[in-house]
Image 1 (cartoon, one colour):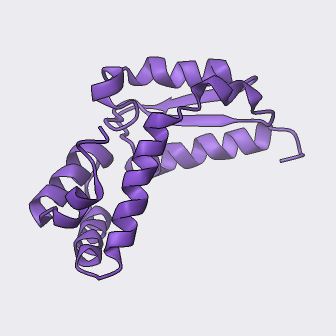
Image 2 (cartoon, helix red, strand yellow):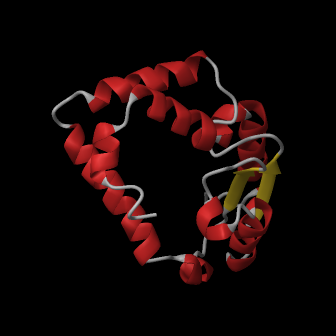
Length: 150
């Protein structure tokens, strides 16, 4: 993955490649808002400061791969809600996890003491966009049922 995604790739991505990655990996539902985000990403790619963004993204990906945190999830000691889209094509990454969205989400829930998991049907990686009403309801329910210390 580190070899596939590097700052040069972000710097040289065509509009067609950007559109493909947004639609294939990030958003399960496309609408005018997604179109605006794609246009903004294309515009950003033409700005001189975009190289810094490309470096930051590539280093973030490398950091996630080099320093996985799954073994530390048990250290989380606050009420936790995990919201996943059943059609998330990014996390878990199909290359590294075989696209086992449900089992990866459940393992996160099981590793965090008392965590709650909500799987939202037909939503992708941007579950808050793809299924805003269901996402907001899950968050409201969680907040209203959690201790007042939140």
